[in-house]
Amino acid sequence: YAAIVLALLLGAFLLWRAITGWAPSRDDYPVQGIVVDASHGKLDWAMLAATGVDFAYVAATEGSKDRDPSFAANIASAREAGVRYGPLHRYDLCRLASDQATLFITTVPRSDTSLPAAVDFGFSEKCTSKPDRALVLSEVATFLSQIEAHLGRPAILKVSQDFEEHYRLSTSIDRTVWLEKTWLLPEYAARPWVMWTANPQRRIDGVDEPVQWVVVRE
Image 1 (cartoon, one colour):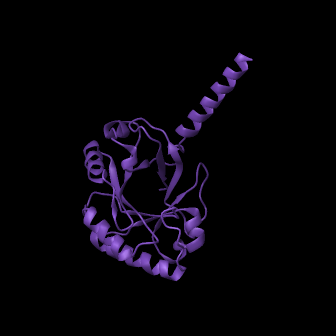
Image 2 (cartoon, rainbow, N blue to C red):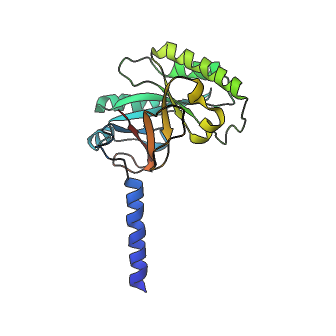
């Protein structure tokens, strides 16, 4: 009986390691990276670079009031380690687009070397409101025009499946899309994806907490 329990525990552990360690093949997707924020604590960026993190999207702002306290330190450390980085804003349907843009612009410095900004669209427990689609599209267009004027380049739309199905952002806003689907190719947008969160809970050396693992389709 003890041997059976041990075998089951070992099997469960190996399965857990396989799931949390999985990433798409580098042969298919040579460029792969992560999403990080303050919840990940202090990162060993040199270790991340050495173990295959080609780029990082670093949380900068959320809504109209929340700045990520680790943003400045993370982008400085990423730059020092040679990891390409881009800022990420988590969009809040309950806040005015102009207020969100102001927060982003006053937090994220313009840089000719950083990656395009990513804007994360998804439903959350903080905001249960689901405004009319026309209003949302208008507000998103306002937000994008302001942050893109600041950064000098188009942003990327990181859109969850339920948000896309409800608002169909990709049918009305012509931007690069970044989709999410664990282990399986995402096909829920109106245009082909360029970035894909393939494993939202991958464990890697250099960070204590699981990270979103993202690949780029070239």
